[in-house]
Length: 190
Image (cartoon, rainbow, N blue to C red; front, side, top):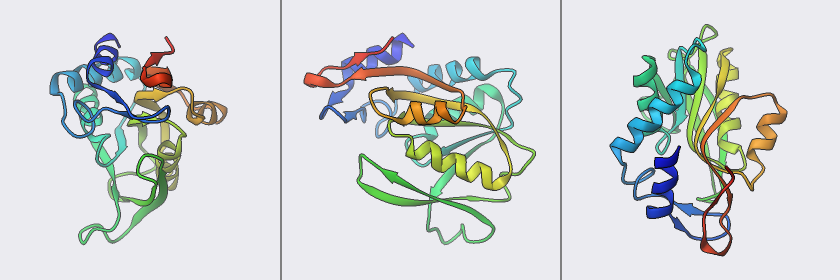
């Protein structure tokens, strides 16, 4: 997706060889036109897959997931970072470690929103080591639902996430694949 790659190059900031900051358009301030394009692209790549729900993690995955849900005409569920006064009963729960934040979070989805009849598209802002995707896979598995695939806005291909998910047989569609952040420069794989 050329518009996304251009945005990464013009507004992204390489903080280290492992960390790319994209808060100017994706995970703090959101570029609505770009999110609309991203949602459309995910919908095109996963159309005719029988998707009934999209699942993401709060907060950074919500914008691209909602736009994909709008394009596909399906509801979007975001795994909440537990604990909430209103999210207490009949929960699917999993844990996820954030490399960027260096913290572990407990994620929860209410069982009333996800069940064995659902065929799910997972959407997230980044794929690095695959921890977030694996936590979402765990939550979907607890519901007995099936997974159509994983849509990723930005993949850090130099980290192990894709290989681990590929090994488990998941279809992964990444809109921008980064080969390297070495020398403070973004180099794309494709």
